Length: 249
Length: 251
Image (tube, rainbow over all chains, first blue to last red; front, side, top):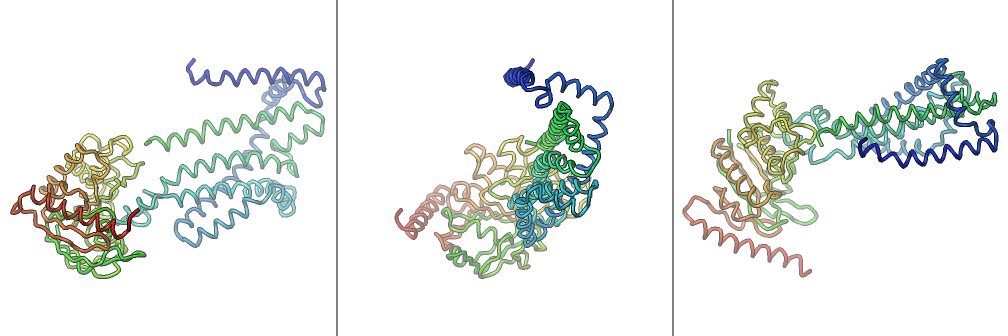
């Protein structure tokens, strides 16, 4: 084992202590309040075997893909606008700070009023919450493009499009990836909350349903599924892309 | 093709007058060094000549055509800045190829041009390296290759060796001098190092302390012995530095 792997050894130690404490507390308070680790593991095995895990994960990810994907597209347009027009930059800034300070719950309530109990409620909520995060990252990236490089582009008479593709896009990409990484994590957390209302699939729905039928161990199982999704996308997608972008460093 | 440069009564005010009034003319193929104390407006003058900054007064003619302040002039001007200003995400070759795009060269011709000028700058074998993987001196040479690749009518260099150590500086001076002989470009070279100017320039222009005027214009054609020229210029620049500090007042 390499030193990199040994680094996680203390974490495993602490985790072992927590699991031991978890077992004790679950004996003391009962499976309804705190199911045992074994029950959670068995529950996880069940949803994998029945394929339920894929159905609800796919439903949640589908909504995230639309809501978060839409937010990324709009954020890219905002970044482009702030590159092209100085006035647009100020307007976008002001709107983003308003969106940033709006609570998740506001969007959940409004989306239920507007879209009723449908797929569009969690999609809209996800869109409105992730948009300011991704967009402010991109706009910040556009603002941080090195003016000296742009001046170099002017000296050599690069066209607006050449400057955009050769200078602006490469210097903004790291900001975009960072924004998408944070935004995706947020999208997963937020869409699950919005799924409590009005839809009949998805991780949020099935968690709330498990609570209602007193299957507390399944609440833990689905929480575990969320952690796995997040870890997988972070390491396999966003970190990999960041590394690839940084290969010239 | 190298062209003549005419600077007529050019002045620049920021909040205070930086350049009072400067006039000089440069023949095609000359190597002119602009000298002067730190902060006297050498870089500003170079930026005005390059069309990166509009003058407050006066005008600049390049090959008989006025240079505008927006960087949009019909003559080709190559600039080597104090920093290399290479795009770090592109290889040295891609950096040079990029500036050939507006010239309308085909991809194969761009690549050939890039490789030729990188070789001229002593970077053969490093074409595929990214800027952060080579030394500062090599980056600055790549920036020079880039400026030459557009075959500029006028090449502007703003203390391009400021960040280099003494040995690399000397090597680069010889390289630039050689490239100048081989390509015959008109060069305007800003420096505050007297020995550097005497070593490479054909015409030396000494500016006064801010607001800048021309204190002395010397032809470095061998009629004045180099040691004496260096001493004279050193005396002048000391006087100007003292004057500049006198204007600011004691600290």
